[in-house]
Image (cartoon, rainbow, N blue to C red; front, side, top):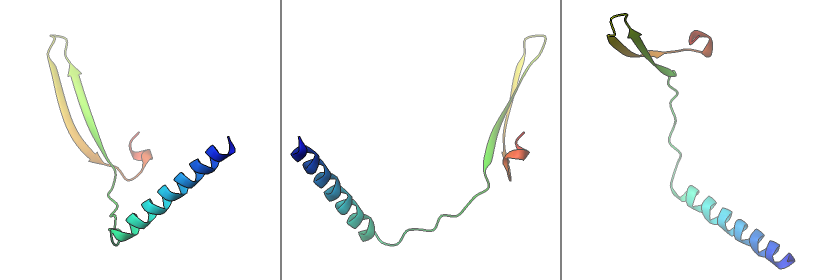
Length: 68
């Protein structure tokens, strides 16, 4: 039983080593630019006569307090 654990640990270590060397070989990591979060809003109106209208728009929000 102990040899199975040792074999599994060796496999995990080899996988981490190979994965780590491939990540470094790809080159520099591109910069990630931060965008303001956007929320898609769907307004659906149902009128007394049975007509339904929808309005969809996207809003940028600076923080969670502005969403509510």
